[in-house]
Amino acid sequence: MLNKLAIIFLYFVLVIFSLSAQASDLAKEKRWADQTVDSIMTGDAVWLKADGQKFLGIYTEPTTDKKLGGVIVLHGLGAHPNWTDVVQPLRTRLPDTGWFTLSLQMPILDNKADYKDYKPLYSEIAPRINAGINFLKNKGVKNITIIGHSMGATMAGYYVANNKRPEIRSLVAIGATGNMFKDPKLDYIQSLKKISIPVLDLSGSDDLPGVVQTKKLKAKTAREAGNKNYYQVEIKGANHFLVGKEDELVTEVNKWLKKYN
Image (cartoon, rainbow, N blue to C red; front, side, top):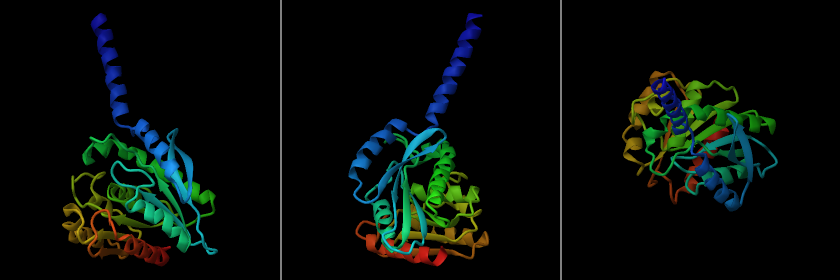
């Protein structure tokens, strides 16, 4: 009897550990949020809910009289919604040309976590993006583009491939790695096979090898999937984080938004 109770207890311990291991590091999210909220110079911190958990978003309204639509921005590996590279330039400067922006805190793990360790967290992606979409809809925004950088691009691609929301008019994937793990969740190539909305694949000429070396495969995959509105743009001299190329980044994304929203 004692052995049976011990086995049952061990089973529940393992289940609880397994569930906790498959969730975003909420303590780290809180630390990021505490630091991030104090650093916001443009836009407002907003608290959204997904699966009963609060998470941070940064919302910025257009500074122009004409409102063109909305943008949801997803950061990369282990980052936050006011990350200096890529995320901050887009979320703060696109409003100057008529776009609402909402930068979301995506699920994160501790600093030692690798790309593949994020696979269990992919179940948390859709609830967070859906919360962002609903937030913008409540602001009267009817057309939305999702922009993701690095792992955020993989997450955005996975979401678009598996969630058909009429509000999502296009996808912008910045620094998207190709078939890194050959897994439906972690593999951007697999997502491209199922995406029919317009896609802008933007990268730097000095981007990561996994981005540069899979450019032809990404284009081929989109073409074979029948996506006639898949385009690639390469920014000369730009690295994975587009440091020093923020003007070019915002210009290219803005051109895309005006064309496909």
